[in-house]
Length: 423
Ligand code: EPZ
Image (cartoon, rainbow, N blue to C red; front, top):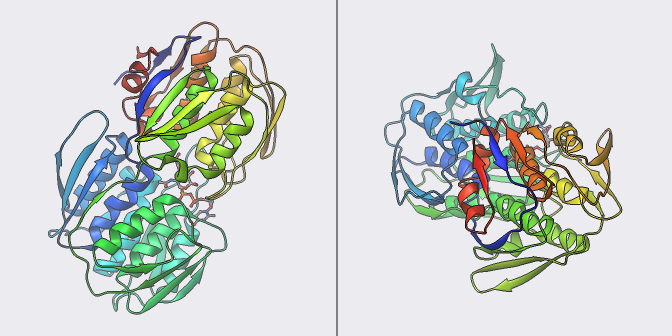
């Protein structure tokens, strides 16, 4: 697989971009297949490397899957879950992708035992799972940490309880939601994450027979059932991919039609902020049209849990603010180390300074193409966005980060008259 992408400078995005299924919805949904012996079919799954990693992990547990309707933008997966015989998620898989931790709750709920490697950190932060473990203990599991693994047991099954998250955690909420679905009695999750991906997971679990209410709010109630059954489910659209391409239209002074329904509801605060900066949004049939006003203004951004401004669009927005007029501030409140794209943008002539969790950006009229390095998934897309508007060409290295979360970006941009190519 080639490691670099060449981005030609000073291009304008003009056209339609179909938005794929959400990586951060598909990953928990794949883990949810563990909860039923009848299997699960997922449609509109994005063909991404993180999805492939999750499928390898499910394979080691004994879950076989078949692929259909495969194209560069989506695929359908059918998971066969009646022969799960191994309850261990090994380090060499979990270290590649933290979301592997999502098999913890389902394995515990259905089989009463599992051994899952501690995920370890990643580029953007330590990424602890202490709240996942505290929540599972509240559900009656015994948890032991030994030689880098979580040993979890619930021999007599999990028991419904009331659990309040001290901080909002997306996968922590997902792990407990899945575990509680098969617990004995009612569980109330307070200060739960409200991300659309949680709602999507809950709606799939309900189709499998789970009794859930309040999903999408900060208080989710789950009445445990004895078993879940087969269903098929279509994965929610990827709001982070949609936001990334909206910024592409803004930064290149172009226009893009994001094809997919109700994208607006998935990005309330982001869209408000983009309008402040100078992007215009218009509902069109089957999608959302994003047009640049031609004048970009600086603003103040603070990342927050949904419905606040998504941290996963922070790096991309920083690229946009690098070429907006005036001063901008970005407060990154979710991850302690999510400014690694700053050094790379500075290599392209951006004027950014960072103190702690705050970045100050002074808008420049022009960025200059340069060889840069992707450090994490969303940083890689922010560098490509900067390269599109820069004078001269940009080469983004370590582009495997991009392939974790964006499918067929060259093709999607190519259909909008924008040339980026792997070299
Ligand atoms: C999910 O990660 C997403 N990943 C991330 O997207 C996203 O950045 C993040 O939510 C925030 O929206 C998936 O959904 C697969 P958290 P997650 O638990 O669940 C702290 C991307 O680019 N915390 O909501 O791991 C944690 O340190 C990825 O697609 C604890 O302290 O994030 C962080 O400060 C990057 N203890 C905060 O909570 C815990 O047990 C939010 O983390 C769990 C989390």
